[in-house]
Image (cartoon, rainbow, N blue to C red; front, side):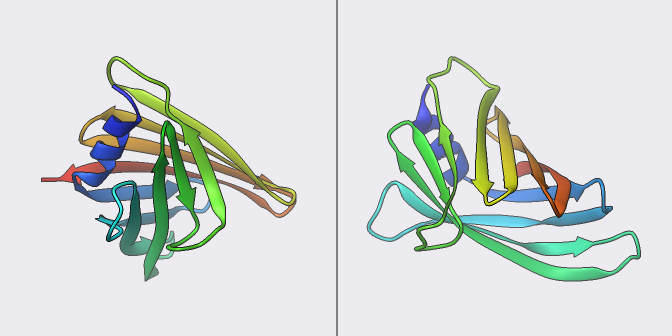
Amino acid sequence: MDSNTVWKVLNQHSWHFSKRLPESGIVITGQVTPAPIQGTVNRMTWHEQGSWSDRHDKSYVCSLTHEYVLEGDRLLIYSGPETTVLLHEFCIKPFQQFPIVMQHTHYCGQDTYACEWIFLNETSFSMQYTVLGPKKQYRIEALYTAIS
């Protein structure tokens, strides 16, 4: 199995997600709708729509859209549709079975964004994100599960 397997997993489902920011008590839940970009086979938008709540029971609607591009054995994640700001570049090595682990660290000025994805199987994956910098220090722990 290779990068095409990862691409298929990401594309074949809509996803429910639950994200937790342990340091702040924020919880974000919602759904992801991946959508192929018309006229391409290796580009899609990854649109997250949901709500976040904090320790004070305040809740807000939120959304996030990235563009995913598969180039050979690399999964590129851009900050939004049709942008040139590359957030992450995961190199996907051939694998025999799940779990599949992908890691990448992105630097922006003095800030470091370290991301790890673990595909547990074809219907769930986790994401760990650590952000460190002079004015930033937080983690995001997420679980994505396929909607059948």
